[in-house]
Length: 316
Length: 275
Image 1 (cartoon, each protein chain N blue to C red):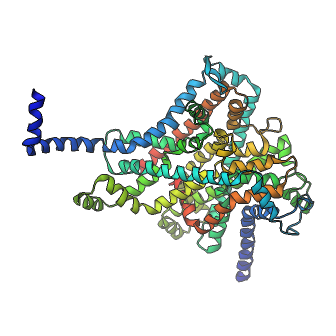
Image 2 (spheres, rainbow over the protein chains, first blue to last red):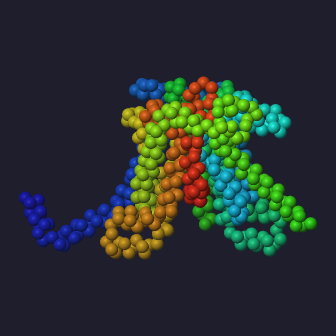
Image 3 (tube, rainbow over the protein chains, first blue to last red):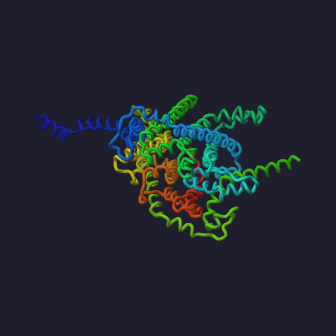
């Protein structure tokens, strides 16, 4: 009865009531609008990012395999203890550490020097900047195969050049000692241009008047560098440190194409290990536990980065 | 004397500049030169600089060694599909983050920043398991969907939307334009430079990507170009470096050509993240 009575009233007298109503629903619509706008993004992040993070932690407590996802056996922390007991995995962690320290350390030093040198207006410097940067945008597949060819111990260009200047040929990828060095070299070659340009961007954002003031004080080149340029660049340096470390942790393509982790496990690193265990050996437990370890490593670095970003915001 | 010293120093610097340029560009030139050599010439030590005769044949061999037209189509479809999806998802999200105050905004934006920091290699395994539950492994969807929401894209667009003056939006609202319309017909065109920058970044990144297609696909019909190129290496026992390098040229040349013409855009696209 009431419903029947209410309906014509709404339709009939209209104006006041419907205006009020549409006003309320309009306000509601405006309130939920931003949530609707971010919803698709959050749905995708949830499905392909946050849920997988939780899921891989869950998976790391089971013995499972990609061959049969229905059968999973709870094993607690057994995957982790097994990993840390395993000598191969200790070597994988060690390799990842060596690779990261060398790539990041050398890469950042080298690109800082290049940036100091190339941060000039004349056109040549721009051209050399572009040249140094060019490997960064080329597929790592091509870079890896190109360097495999350059490093060919018998017919490669690098050994030809060494011979040309009277040095003995190098073993490059074929020896346990030199394979890691070769991978580090390729990674630096590919990444140094990016770092250099980030440094240059940082240098150009340092206010000019600071340098002018230093000049008025007859500050020496070295003093200007150590007292102005380097301290002013510390946020840039820290950013590069984190970004480079995270990307070194995930090295995979060059290993997969150039060495397959060898010779004798000497270039096997975390992501390649996870890939091998999970996709080749169907050892899901070890692969997911190793993923969690990588996740923790990257997560800690991210936290560190966030802390710094907060600080930067404070100073502004 | 001073003059002579300056000239000498300038000369040394020019030589050094050329040397640095060569270190980074010569390997590409070597790729190019090798791609045109014959097999006997490739296996000649010390190597010849210039090919004795230019073997365009190598490109044909590389191209015919697998279903390359399919690889190229897949690569374009995947990189293009990702770009369109990222655009459709990032624009509203960035608009909301830039222009609305709502409960939980800071928190949701924080989640976006976390997604910006953690790379896919860390969680490929659970995503693979997810995909296999949905029956999407070995489909082009498994290559596109995980990249649908780009934290970097949202971040960039938000910055650019925040710079649009309030008056522009107020004027549009007075004209009774809907929020949806304001977003797509006023904000998006004003963010064009950022969109170009982001588009270049995203397309190049996914065109080059090797890891994800390697994990997710196992048949030729859904493989992308980097996978196809990498299989040239395994093709026949002895390594035909001339054919491999010819294949590499197919992958690298489009990128280097685009880089040559859009250098400024591309550099700012890749370097932007640092700011």
